Length: 391
Image (cartoon, rainbow, N blue to C red; front, side, top):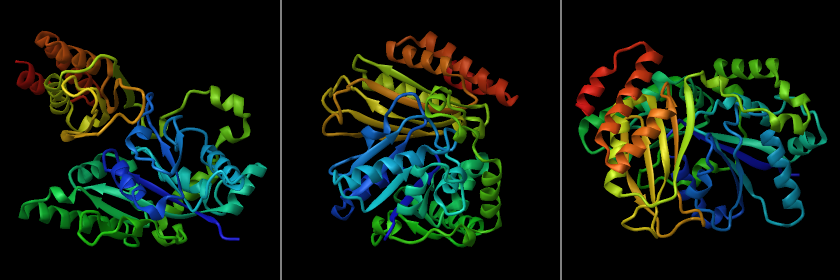
């Protein structure tokens, strides 16, 4: 019996996973694909940013897959198998889109033979009917080098990949940037010599090639990958032995990512004035810099209430918003999800309210608090940011 291939789509925050996934799902050949979307945040958002069409989508909202219950992914695959057997839909492949902070080792350990132990009948059914076919890691040319330098998760995602895909290469318009891209490719080849490297914006690139049926072989990826998987097997997951009721009552732990990583959300029911929101986002990106790991969300713009804005910011880069033709659901609130490194949510919320209400004094106070939290966390002076932005 042929097993259903499972592909893991990963990449650090802002690498463009949802964009690539939309591109793939637009291909009629992928109409019988199940997608598992993992969200790191308190407000569900990614399912509204992925175009579904006829594709079945199962969404994980319990936080980062590598931090929550280890068997979550096998539970979801078992559910998909049961539904497919009941002829509710065809199932040709499964794509798991991870959060940008995901450590791939626990996930791979759940899906490869000899990894995490199959403790239940459900796990045996998953092992007989699904196989890990490949790991695709996206690397953003704009912030990829910084992410590799500053975040171990980014380097680990690259190490576990059997396919690497460069994103945002269409932004390269000068010789210096092109040279930087070649340098990044060289570094990726040194970090993971076994992985093929693709450019997602080359004219001849076909996203479907990333999801061709193959067998994932961690042994071909080097000693580091083998060692990380051995460690996962050795430490196990203490939650595996608890009951389902016990497990769902526990708060998710983000310990793998360190205590500095914070995820929080801001929502607003009333429509927002576009220029005021742009000011907020630019001030935040300038003040937080590399500590602003990711902002993404849907914005209800007062000037065009029936067409929401999809906004993205990664570190110091704020990307132009995308305007959708219509709201993806009945929820028309502005919903923003933030992932930060060493920044308290409170001042960010204060800056949001002050910028939207036109209170420059409140914005200045919020910026000082953001700079103070960064300085306190990293023991480095950040007051120059306050002087530059808040006068």
